[in-house]
Length: 224
Image (cartoon, rainbow, N blue to C red):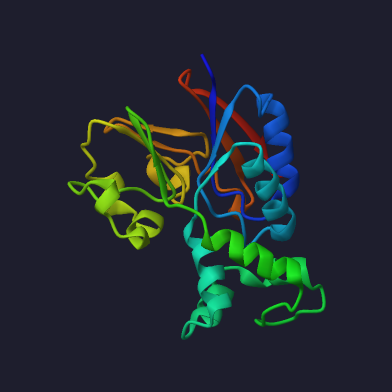
């Protein structure tokens, strides 16, 4: 049976991402890779992560948007206060990965930045199979995912993971696993209400997780 490998919340950590793919033995010809968003912000190489994600999508990966990617897109579109909001949420390292001379919030003039913005603008917000929903943040309990505002799919937290009772398993990132389980811990969280949280907190100096399905095998790499 073909493996599905799921990773979320890379946040500019290109070296961790590459190491995790290697550890999991990812083979684009044999495995289905699903990426759940938040490729940018806080980490040192958002540009490099997006370049790699673009390559992986060409090889067949399913690539979804996260809330940080959406903030980058909104800032690039010039939406009111979007650049300031993005800056408060870790944009400066992202901007500097395109132009090291940037010291404060301002959009790079490089073509590669705008190519990446265009790529993000084309991403979907969920992927659904017969038994699983893959999404960045979660779903709106009681509302079909196809009818849910994309904003909710990339931002929702407690309203989802504390109340979800759907038949399909929801695999999500966004909320670090240490916030989902009593006592913390960054390993993949398997909730009793049919949810699986895979954000290992790489953005906060912790680890990057990968979930293998259907086996539920777990891989991770830790920040040095």
